[in-house]
Length: 75
Length: 525
Image (tube, one colour):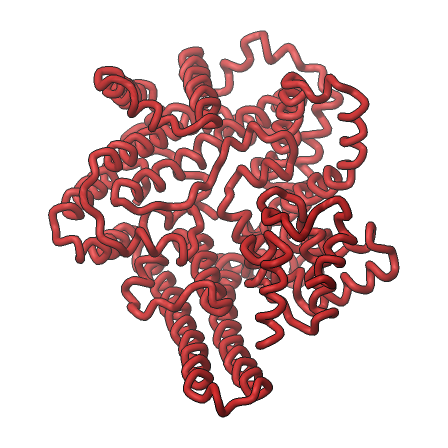
């Protein structure tokens, strides 16, 4: 999870990723971030995030993203 | 069957009465019969296509679901026996098989759409490139094929992504594909969102009935009072481009924007209102697009379900494809995070907008239209830091007056791009738009020339009244539901408004000889 938060913080150093739960809803991360993030997460955690996984519920918080990555690691 | 016809009004009335008279558990079945009757009006040729598309995605959905159900059963039955690696392998195998069924179904339904819609376009282009003389066979476009194909593709993809479970009752899936209000021009619905109210039982609710009826009436008002009146003027300006240059092009941009808006949103109001009368909630497709301050916002407010469809089923799949992921990593390592991360998004955006253009029609003007929209959005995106600095430096840029200027600017930019749809000829469109900058005929705006374009003074008054009502309603909608606002008013006022709307449609509606209302513009897509 720390590694994931670090990756997010590189994109937006001013955001509290441990507590923010509306990254998509509030427009904090955009399409550029999502696409870069997917490439980084796939590489770093050896997962394969599909287009079907790109929904606000999975990207609204670092916790939700981490749960997605953990689920995909088990697949 | 056109929404703007006596037969549709009669059809809706009969279906509505039966819907609440018959046992509730048969309601969805009645909607299916109604939808098939509605569609059968388009003829057997069209009917066959919708049946084939529904059958293909139904079968694919079941086959995909079977893979996942078998996977889950196998893993849960052998939880203790299988190692994590073995479980992963089973999941991967199920996914691979599901992918095959998805790919086959998409290839079939999109293949049908491609052959029907693009054969003559491809042949014409081949002929002009290699100088051949192949006959550009033109298929008749089955009614609503672009819309129900997209809806069906979305369903198959959602089952594959496990966002929704496959529907095992073929008749229920057929209803989803063919639900009559949204069949001809959208909105493009998702199975997971629509099926809840589409397939459930509904008891008669007076408020819901009134709201649905009001929405249908509102759609008729926009279409008949504004759109079908303006079409006469717009056609005059398009049919003789040599005569109508310069200032006339500005008029065309302005009036075509209003015509298309009232035509398309009017049709969508009728669709959503008709569905609401049956208790079915269909996704909204517009959110006051002409109040947008930039192109990206405009596209979040205009034809919302199409934009969302392209985002979910084209933009993200292309973005996360292995090829694009490689481009993403490479571009970021080569150009740095700031520039590198833009490249895959912009490349994908170009693909999406070219696809959006070609979806609207098999012609280069639509492709150019899509790419110009893409260009404006990318330029706005790149200008964002400069805009930010500008807003920080100049306080007046944060006032409502400046917001209004941005709204006007966006209206005209989108309007000038939109005229590609009018002339349907790229070089001609550019010539016509260029003529605005060298125009010397601005006096036609004031010297009565406007009255030589097929509309009388009374027609312009009717259009102006229609526009005032539309703008007023839109302003109220920005704050909340207009129908809720109306529902809170005294009965006399409520009924007066509805009767006034009805009277306006009857008295101010632009009816041709024998009530031959114009086809909705989006029906042809």
